[in-house]
Each structure stands twice: as C-alpha cells, then as structure tokens.
Image (cartoon, rainbow, N blue to C red; front, top):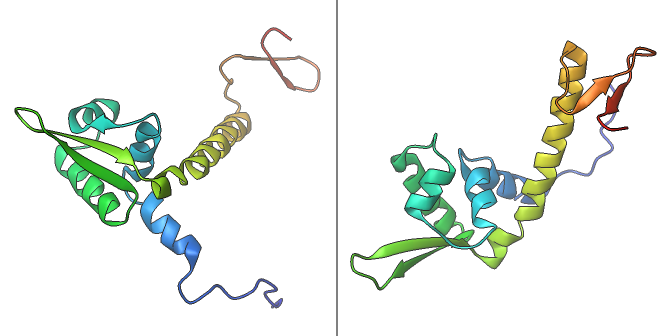
Amino acid sequence: MRKNRSPAPPVSCPLLECMSIIGGAWAPNVIWYLRGGPRRFSELRADIPLVSPKVLTTRLREMEEDGVVLRRVMPTSPPSVEYELTPLGARLVPAIEAIAEVGEELKKTRAKKRGKAIPGARESFRGRRRVAAGS
C-alpha cells in the first residue's frame, strides 16, 4: 500500500465544519436563494417548493445557530420574519456557486457517456464531437 502524502487533517477539520452546514438537507438551496437578499419564510417556501415547512423551519434555525443566517422579526401587524445571510453565510456563496458549476459539468459528462443529447448542442457526424448550437 502506498503512503498517504497528504498532511493529517487538524483535530477540528475546517472542511468538516463547512460541510456540516452546506451538507444539510436544503441548506445549499436556502443559501442560494438568500444570496439575492432578505427573504420571508413564505418566499423561501415558494423558492423551494419541495421542502416541508417543518424541515425548512428546522434548517433555518440550525443555520441561525451556526451564524450563517440572520433571523429578523419585522415590527408589522401581524409580525413577519425575514431571513438573510450573515457575512459568514455570504462567504459560503462562492463555494455553492462553484459546486453548482461542477454539477453542470458532471451532468454533461454523464449525458455524453449515456449517449443522451445535451440541450442546446448538436452532434457532428465526424468523431461524434458535440458542438454548441450556432457554431
């Protein structure tokens, strides 16, 4: 067996800390939609229709405890609540965007391997190379 040349992770691994937040169910979606600014609970529910109110509430509370999301009660009648990213939460946005970009590349690669057409692309007859539409 080859020796692992990577340094040992710190006792409290920063990568695991980050992944414990963005790895939670629906957390990347919440961060994605809050990157555009404050959203009310009902707006987040509309943005992420597959999440149940209970799970969304739980996730928002966890993210608030972790210092990623700020919960603000608005002095209205009836009271409404807005959620927004904290500066720490905003630092996760580039990571989520990078993961989304890699996800798009993975979808294309998998579609190619399965022989499925990629929307917006056409296939040349020589070499089976995919060419972007309009090229």
